[in-house]
Image (cartoon, rainbow, N blue to C red; front, side, top):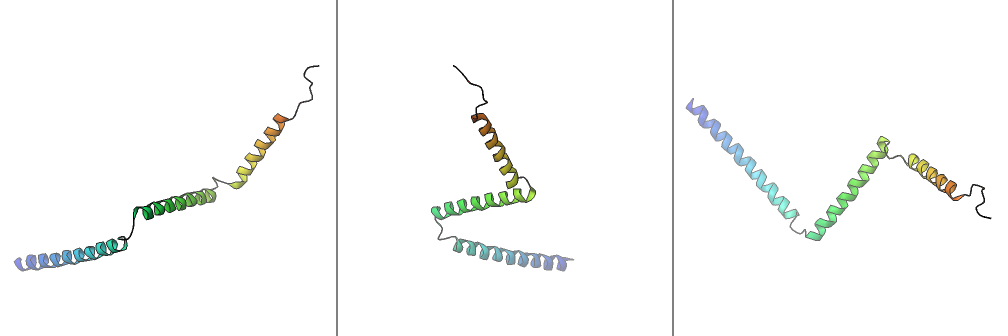
Length: 96
């Protein structure tokens, strides 16, 4: 029984060491790739991400039918008709 515990703990320790080395390599690669970033680059990336997110949301809304261009055109036409009706005189003369 002692032999099994000894070899299993040795195996687990080598397994943990292996994963720790992989983590160190990944962190070193990440630090190397981000070492030349400055705050202006990060701000530009943030703005680009916000633009892409807004575009994706608009596309998803169009696909789901929530932001249909046809409905917007109909609303604009109704608003234009309402404005034209308010501006036209109704035939009654005032004063006189």
